[in-house]
Image (tube, rainbow, N blue to C red; front, side):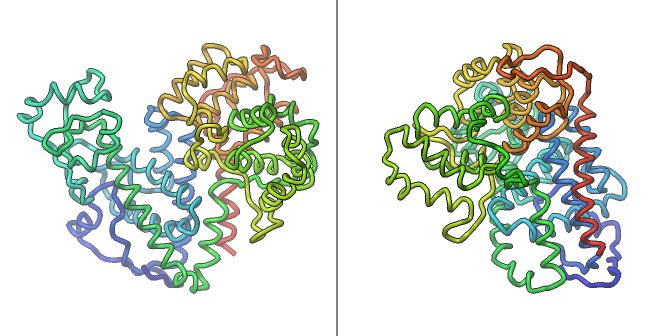
Length: 505
């Protein structure tokens, strides 16, 4: 793909040629675009793609993926940026072309670090999942073939012959009618096999339509991950273009969410406040780390990194952090000299005062959920992702969550909606009907909690959590899901103004 400062020369393609370029509303992005485009169009497509992926992220946190609300809201967001989403729509060539080119532009921006790649892959997977869910059944086989996936739908006769075995081996069917079934090489369905959720015969897995999306997404993730690694290797050549380097850096550094690196709060939190704040304003992941530290007077490396950077983000200074950790470890009978020699360096390192002088930022929800799962004796990670359901239930009971609320949270966890579960927990302990934001970061949880406790939000009359002593205004408002989305859209529009202003300079 080449760029020029002037107007782009549009390719004049006939109807059949256009259909051949983009036969479906979704794709695996196997071939990069080859046409020339102007820098203006490059910038506009980049902005629109970031807007869409941010909307995908926000909706995934505010709603359960796959529900009617989620589907309708996401379709509306795709319409706004004029990208493709449905088959059989007229004049879809331009929408599919925009989708294709914008995806590859963001590959250049989001291949630069592991965190950026992880965020980009997750949002693109969620977008593909939505598009596949509305793909007509008669188009699925063609899409699989065009995506180089050797998945074949078996004949009606073959399906009837194995229907009993397939139904018994596929819990996702749950008594529903068996329609399409795909015959897939065993090696492509290992995740389903590990969970004993698929019927195997003669080296092939027989996968119902409901389960095929998981395999397709896994293939997409693998291919996109490899493609991003290759793009990263070629990045120096792209960065040598002075027109593109600042633009790509601005895209990648500004719109994967705030990093919550102190945010100007340095020194505003005293060590005496931490115990009280942990019960009122810490998310469960940090609350359990604080409790484990107080009880055991020690945390392993994963816990120290996750909790230490969180405390840094809420405002602890380097001196406070050294004092906090040293006091606690000495209570565990650790010799002060041993702490100074073995642990203080790591704390200074996390503040950018040692080693490569990298000023580390607090971990996001996605990083905690996907990275470094806790082992025996560890307390880091996400309780909604990494805790046994029964232990999670006991923990929520100890936090004074009502039984009905616990059941809601456990249902969300069962559906792997971990951030939505944490957001529901936030609403319950703060007695609000709708928190009005998408929860993506533990430090965001803390900041929003403090806003509520300091009178920045409406509080219900009845307090669910007796641990919060402060009296608050008893104003109750009923909000529906659209109010949360309106808040998200407003926030997103403010975020994107800076990007658009940057490009228009």
